[in-house]
Image 1: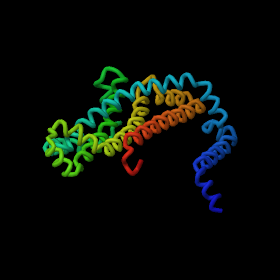
Image 2: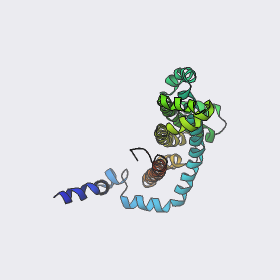
Image 3: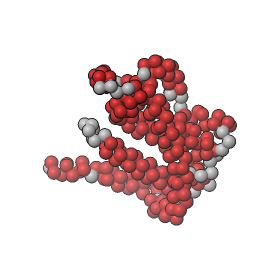
Image 4: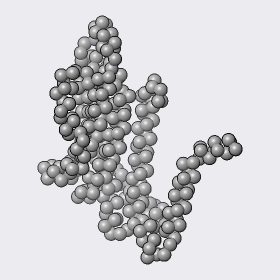
Amino acid sequence: MRIFVKYLSKFSGFLFLLLLLGIWTLISSGPEWSSQYLFPSPKAIAEALFNSREELLRSAWASLLKLVPAYFAAAVVGISIGIVSGSVPWVGNMLKPISRFAAPIPPNVYIPYAIAILPTFYLSSTFIIFIAAFWPIYLNTAAGAADIPEKYKRNAAIIGIGRFEYLWRIAFVASLPSIFSGLSVGMGLSFIMLTVAELFGENTGLGHFVQFYADYSDYPNMVAGILWTGIVVLAIMELFEFVKRKVLFWTKAN
């Protein structure tokens, strides 16, 4: 019995997916007027994925061209300011009121204003992604740098490590677990805001793909776009977790 439970637990995720697939198939096989229109069959979705594969690949590439530069910029700026903010008390105190006010504001509320003041939808999208990723990266980095034990600072002073060298040799390395936590949250928010931004006037990307076919009530292609978006996000998040495990090899969680 224990062996059965062990294997059942091991394959529970796969079995749950099969259950969901069975439920979806059952719903889509109902009367055409009530089910098949809004719930296309798995076969129809698979055909849409195959027939639209080139368009889906182009859409994914277009989304990544917005996501990668904005996320990379947010990581560089957020980590840099966060390390300084967490290590230098007066800088942290100066930035705390700004972060406490601005960080809770949902990034999507900036979309109309970004579209109004920036010359292209591409810049508007990258700006929104930057805002979405910046705050969790900055806040987690600052918290990690602020929590460094005092003995690290004393030992650094004893061996003659200067302020700037301390920031990148001690504070940065010691804050890596917190930095990666912020990077992970920022990555998830970046994908959310990417697809949201692409719904507001963009003519490329995965969000546009889904919205385009939704406007024409082509639900097989719309669902295919949603599934493909999930696959792309899952692949990138798994790659991120792989890099995280390699970098943070000394932590208990890895």
